[in-house]
Length: 146
Image (tube, rainbow, N blue to C red; front, side, top):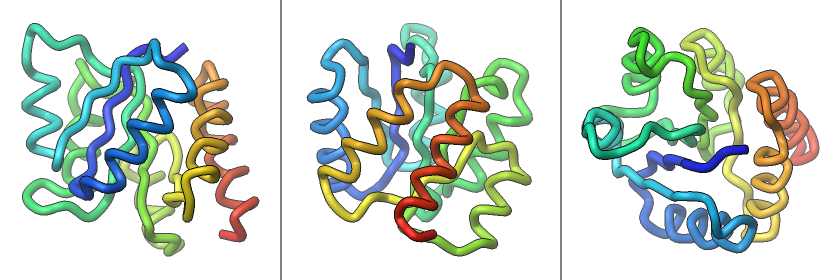
């Protein structure tokens, strides 16, 4: 069970919708947010903050983008085992391939609406392994036609 989830995304509307959907699905989850990779890394480095159990990571952000953050944490022994799902509006195969090459657990295309987001989160949060997360993210992409 994922008790602590970090969303790294500079879009405040997307962040608010994500937080609301997550709260409806499981109000017991602790939700953290960061505006970019540097902000996320700084929060993870704080000793009074527990590490997330799962990270949703946008690709395009100012400052440290998603690719840079993913590369950074996957090279660090203290963070490399945290599952990371890329969470982007992009459906480009090159982005999906790059996420896999850099060590992301999966690639989730941002759902077009709130109900789609809730369905995706329910499916993902049911998973207990990185393999399950990866398969679920692929299933969600295929069901959306990507």
